[in-house]
Amino acid sequence: FLIGQARFDEAHNVIDRELKEAENDDLLWAKATIWHYSRQYDQAEKAYLEISEKYPNYLPSRTGLVLMYLAQDRYEEAEPILEKIIVLQTVHTENNYLFPAMFFAKTGQPGKAREMIVELYKLGEKKPGVWGAIALIHIALGEKDKAFEYLERSIEEREHYGYLLKVNP
Image 1: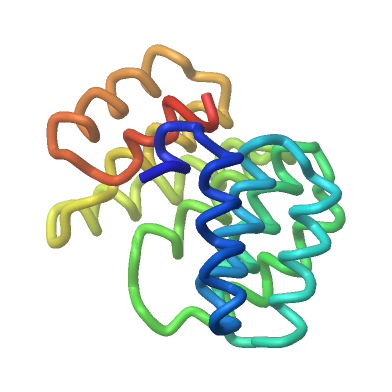
Image 2: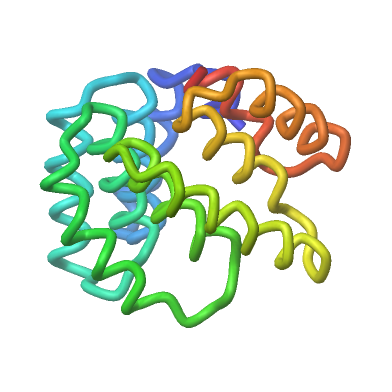
């Protein structure tokens, strides 16, 4: 809740209190995510890497790291982590297409990014929650009008992507 409202300091305090009681990969990831969204990239990177080392199959830390690297145009560092994510993913979700598509869009491969959008459409016919992912890909492609179209659809369907407007515009 606090992260979604961009109340990062308060969120850190809550997590620090919880971490004193028990170390937890989800809490460590949340702390890294707060640093990521508050653009404290050095701290976020250190935390994401620590979590990935401690819990090698914990995907949220790796996906956070990829998104952070993409936001900083650090594509060479993002690529091997993205490849690891693809290998580790066992559940079929929008993230199977979102992260590769964003990577393709950011590295000048728009055709491959659009192929991922087609796959997301197919997934969206069977499972809700893909419209925000499609909006993020259009943002990465520089297609703002299409991004807003899908973001509106995402908000109408109450997908979890709405919080990004506040913390990661």
